[in-house]
Image (cartoon, rainbow, N blue to C red; front, side):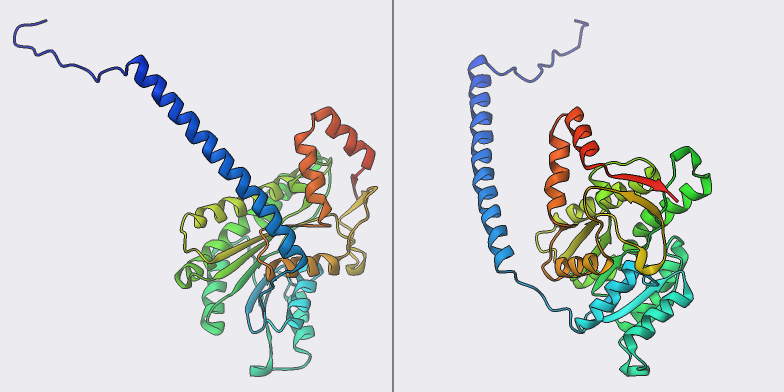
Length: 325
C-alpha cells in the first residue's frame, strides 16, 4: 500500500449461516405466494363460471361509441347493432359513400338533434387526420365512451408475392392506426378516468396459417398492443378504463360481396352478425378477451402447450388453409 493511502473495507460477505437463512426465507416467500396464487386462481375460475351463468351487463344506452371501418362489413354491423342498444354512433371510414350509408341506415331519415349517428371520412393510418377527427368529435359530442378500432385490410398471398406497398399499407391500417387512435382518444378518457377501448384482432393472433403472413403479423401486434396497454394502465389501482380484444375466426364475407380469400377448414366459417353480437356482449360485460366461437381460445391455447409436431398434426387434421383469390 502506498504511503498515505487508507485501506477501505468492502461490504462484508454474508456468512454461510446468513446465506442459508436468506435462502430459506426466499423459498418460504415463493411457496406462500404460490399457494396464494393457486387459491386466487381457483376463486377466479369459480367467479368466471358464476358470471357466465349470471352475467352482469352495463348499459350502452346514450353512450357515444366511435367505430372505425364502419363503411361496410363488421364495422357496419356493429354500428347497426349498437344503435339498437340505444348508443349514439360516430361512424368512421375512408370510404365516404359507405360510411354515410351506414349512418343513414341508423338514422332512418332522422336529421339534426334527432339523429343518433354521425359519420366522418378519415384515413385512420394518417395521424394528422386522426388528431383532427378527435378534435372534431370531442367538440361536437363532448366525449367518446367506447372506442372500437375495427378498420382493417384483409388479403392473402404468399409473402414474396406481396408488394412492398401492400405490406406497408396493411401494417399501417391494421396495426399502426391503433396507435394513432388510442393516442388521440386515450388522454380524454384518462382525464375522466372512464372509457372503453376495443380492438378487432383475429384468431390468427393465436395460431398460424400460410398465405397471410403480413395479416397475421398485424393481428399479433394488435393483441400485444392491447394487452400491454391494459397492463400499463392497470398499474394505477383506481384505473377505470376497460379493454376488450375480439378474436373472430374467419368471416363469411359473402353478404357484402367481397371475397378476400378462400378459406378451407373443418371448422365452420362464422357470420358477420355473429361476431358483432359477441363483441357487443363482451363490451357490455367488460370482458378482456373474446374469441368467436368461444371454444377457439381453449383450442388455440392447447396448440401453444403441446409439442410442435403435435400442433402441426392438429392443424393438418382440421385442415384450415387459406388461398389467395
